[in-house]
Length: 199
View 1 (tube, helix red, strand yellow):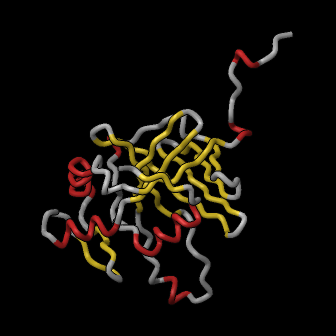
View 2 (cartoon, one colour):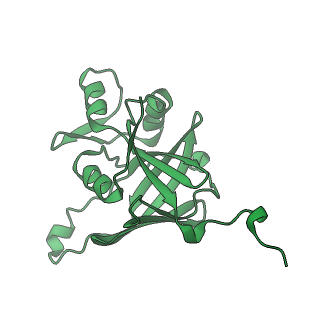
Protein backbone atom coordinates (compact mmCIF):
# COMPACT_ATOMS: atom_id res chain seq x y z
CA UNK A 1 0.00 0.00 0.00
CA UNK A 2 1.33 3.42 -0.88
CA UNK A 3 1.66 5.98 1.87
CA UNK A 4 1.17 9.71 1.40
CA UNK A 5 3.45 11.93 3.43
CA UNK A 6 2.45 15.54 3.90
CA UNK A 7 5.91 16.55 5.08
CA UNK A 8 7.70 19.03 2.89
CA UNK A 9 11.05 18.71 1.20
CA UNK A 10 12.94 19.97 4.25
CA UNK A 11 12.23 16.72 6.06
CA UNK A 12 12.80 14.81 2.84
CA UNK A 13 16.20 16.41 2.35
CA UNK A 14 17.22 15.63 5.91
CA UNK A 15 16.21 12.00 5.48
CA UNK A 16 17.85 11.92 2.08
CA UNK A 17 21.15 13.27 3.35
CA UNK A 18 21.12 10.80 6.24
CA UNK A 19 20.10 7.55 4.60
CA UNK A 20 18.81 7.72 1.03
CA UNK A 21 21.03 5.58 -1.22
CA UNK A 22 23.06 7.90 -3.47
CA UNK A 23 24.79 6.91 -6.69
CA UNK A 24 28.16 8.04 -7.98
CA UNK A 25 26.83 7.68 -11.54
CA UNK A 26 23.62 9.08 -13.03
CA UNK A 27 20.48 6.96 -12.78
CA UNK A 28 19.56 7.93 -16.36
CA UNK A 29 20.89 7.65 -19.89
CA UNK A 30 20.30 10.38 -22.45
CA UNK A 31 17.93 8.12 -24.37
CA UNK A 32 15.67 7.94 -21.27
CA UNK A 33 15.34 11.71 -20.81
CA UNK A 34 12.01 13.41 -21.31
CA UNK A 35 10.45 16.82 -20.84
CA UNK A 36 6.96 17.17 -19.40
CA UNK A 37 5.24 20.58 -19.55
CA UNK A 38 3.13 19.55 -16.55
CA UNK A 39 6.24 19.50 -14.33
CA UNK A 40 7.62 22.95 -15.03
CA UNK A 41 6.86 25.80 -12.66
CA UNK A 42 6.51 26.21 -8.91
CA UNK A 43 5.05 23.72 -6.43
CA UNK A 44 4.31 24.28 -2.74
CA UNK A 45 3.80 22.12 0.31
CA UNK A 46 0.46 22.09 2.11
CA UNK A 47 1.56 24.88 4.47
CA UNK A 48 2.97 27.04 1.68
CA UNK A 49 6.20 27.36 3.64
CA UNK A 50 8.32 25.35 1.24
CA UNK A 51 8.51 25.35 -2.52
CA UNK A 52 10.23 23.59 -5.37
CA UNK A 53 10.64 25.02 -8.84
CA UNK A 54 11.40 23.34 -12.17
CA UNK A 55 13.06 25.55 -14.81
CA UNK A 56 13.61 23.91 -18.24
CA UNK A 57 17.32 23.78 -19.12
CA UNK A 58 17.82 21.94 -22.40
CA UNK A 59 16.83 18.31 -21.91
CA UNK A 60 16.93 18.62 -18.12
CA UNK A 61 15.67 21.08 -15.54
CA UNK A 62 17.17 23.37 -12.98
CA UNK A 63 15.45 22.39 -9.75
CA UNK A 64 15.43 24.87 -6.89
CA UNK A 65 14.24 24.39 -3.36
CA UNK A 66 13.29 27.18 -0.97
CA UNK A 67 11.94 27.23 2.58
CA UNK A 68 11.32 29.77 5.30
CA UNK A 69 13.50 27.84 7.74
CA UNK A 70 16.60 27.12 5.63
CA UNK A 71 18.79 28.29 2.80
CA UNK A 72 17.78 27.42 -0.73
CA UNK A 73 19.47 24.82 -2.91
CA UNK A 74 19.88 24.21 -6.64
CA UNK A 75 20.05 20.89 -8.46
CA UNK A 76 20.20 19.60 -11.98
CA UNK A 77 17.01 17.58 -12.34
CA UNK A 78 16.72 14.89 -14.99
CA UNK A 79 13.26 13.50 -15.65
CA UNK A 80 13.36 10.05 -17.22
CA UNK A 81 11.29 6.92 -17.71
CA UNK A 82 12.01 3.19 -17.59
CA UNK A 83 9.31 0.63 -18.43
CA UNK A 84 6.54 3.18 -17.93
CA UNK A 85 7.77 4.37 -14.52
CA UNK A 86 8.93 7.97 -14.19
CA UNK A 87 11.89 9.05 -12.09
CA UNK A 88 13.70 12.20 -11.09
CA UNK A 89 17.50 12.26 -10.75
CA UNK A 90 18.80 15.18 -8.66
CA UNK A 91 22.43 16.28 -8.78
CA UNK A 92 23.69 19.28 -6.76
CA UNK A 93 24.65 22.45 -8.60
CA UNK A 94 25.80 24.27 -5.47
CA UNK A 95 28.54 23.23 -3.10
CA UNK A 96 28.08 23.79 0.58
CA UNK A 97 30.04 26.84 1.68
CA UNK A 98 33.11 25.72 3.58
CA UNK A 99 35.79 27.91 5.08
CA UNK A 100 38.38 25.13 5.06
CA UNK A 101 39.74 24.38 1.58
CA UNK A 102 41.10 20.98 2.69
CA UNK A 103 37.65 20.00 3.92
CA UNK A 104 36.18 20.97 0.54
CA UNK A 105 38.35 18.32 -1.12
CA UNK A 106 36.36 15.62 0.68
CA UNK A 107 33.09 16.75 -0.91
CA UNK A 108 31.94 14.21 -3.52
CA UNK A 109 28.61 15.12 -5.16
CA UNK A 110 26.23 12.26 -5.84
CA UNK A 111 22.96 11.56 -7.62
CA UNK A 112 19.78 10.86 -5.67
CA UNK A 113 16.61 9.27 -6.96
CA UNK A 114 12.88 9.89 -6.69
CA UNK A 115 9.86 8.43 -8.35
CA UNK A 116 7.68 11.24 -9.64
CA UNK A 117 4.02 11.46 -10.60
CA UNK A 118 1.82 14.37 -11.63
CA UNK A 119 -1.93 14.66 -11.76
CA UNK A 120 -3.22 18.06 -12.80
CA UNK A 121 -2.12 20.52 -10.15
CA UNK A 122 -0.66 17.86 -7.83
CA UNK A 123 2.90 16.55 -7.93
CA UNK A 124 4.11 13.60 -5.85
CA UNK A 125 7.65 12.44 -5.04
CA UNK A 126 8.91 9.25 -3.40
CA UNK A 127 12.50 8.44 -2.47
CA UNK A 128 14.20 5.09 -2.85
CA UNK A 129 13.81 3.26 0.47
CA UNK A 130 17.29 2.57 1.96
CA UNK A 131 16.27 -0.24 4.32
CA UNK A 132 14.50 -2.12 1.54
CA UNK A 133 17.58 -1.79 -0.69
CA UNK A 134 19.95 -2.83 2.10
CA UNK A 135 17.88 -5.94 2.78
CA UNK A 136 17.93 -6.91 -0.89
CA UNK A 137 21.68 -6.40 -1.07
CA UNK A 138 22.32 -8.34 2.14
CA UNK A 139 20.45 -11.33 0.80
CA UNK A 140 22.53 -11.32 -2.38
CA UNK A 141 19.32 -10.90 -4.35
CA UNK A 142 20.73 -7.98 -6.31
CA UNK A 143 23.76 -7.86 -8.58
CA UNK A 144 24.37 -4.20 -7.84
CA UNK A 145 27.81 -2.79 -7.15
CA UNK A 146 27.85 -0.78 -3.95
CA UNK A 147 29.66 0.04 -0.75
CA UNK A 148 28.29 0.82 2.70
CA UNK A 149 28.94 4.26 4.15
CA UNK A 150 27.66 4.70 7.70
CA UNK A 151 25.42 1.70 7.08
CA UNK A 152 23.87 3.31 3.98
CA UNK A 153 24.31 1.70 0.53
CA UNK A 154 26.21 3.90 -1.91
CA UNK A 155 25.78 2.71 -5.49
CA UNK A 156 29.11 2.53 -7.30
CA UNK A 157 28.20 0.65 -10.47
CA UNK A 158 27.52 2.03 -13.93
CA UNK A 159 24.26 3.54 -15.13
CA UNK A 160 23.32 0.49 -17.23
CA UNK A 161 23.56 -1.76 -14.17
CA UNK A 162 21.45 0.62 -12.11
CA UNK A 163 18.83 0.83 -14.86
CA UNK A 164 18.53 -2.95 -14.96
CA UNK A 165 17.74 -2.78 -11.26
CA UNK A 166 15.10 -0.08 -11.84
CA UNK A 167 13.53 -2.03 -14.70
CA UNK A 168 13.06 -4.98 -12.34
CA UNK A 169 12.03 -3.23 -9.13
CA UNK A 170 10.87 0.28 -10.08
CA UNK A 171 7.17 -0.53 -9.65
CA UNK A 172 7.69 -2.41 -6.36
CA UNK A 173 5.65 -0.43 -3.78
CA UNK A 174 8.16 -1.34 -1.06
CA UNK A 175 11.02 0.25 -3.00
CA UNK A 176 9.37 3.69 -3.04
CA UNK A 177 6.81 3.54 -0.21
CA UNK A 178 6.51 7.09 1.11
CA UNK A 179 5.20 9.90 -1.07
CA UNK A 180 5.33 13.64 -0.40
CA UNK A 181 2.64 15.74 -2.04
CA UNK A 182 2.97 19.21 -3.58
CA UNK A 183 0.40 21.56 -5.03
CA UNK A 184 1.01 23.87 -7.97
CA UNK A 185 1.54 27.44 -6.77
CA UNK A 186 -1.52 29.60 -7.33
CA UNK A 187 0.56 32.01 -9.40
CA UNK A 188 1.28 29.16 -11.86
CA UNK A 189 -2.29 27.91 -12.27
CA UNK A 190 -3.78 28.87 -15.62
CA UNK A 191 -7.54 29.41 -15.33
CA UNK A 192 -9.83 27.37 -17.49
CA UNK A 193 -11.04 29.20 -20.61
CA UNK A 194 -14.59 28.70 -19.39
CA UNK A 195 -13.75 30.75 -16.30
CA UNK A 196 -12.25 33.69 -18.20
CA UNK A 197 -14.87 36.40 -18.60
CA UNK A 198 -15.52 37.62 -22.11
CA UNK A 199 -15.87 41.29 -22.92
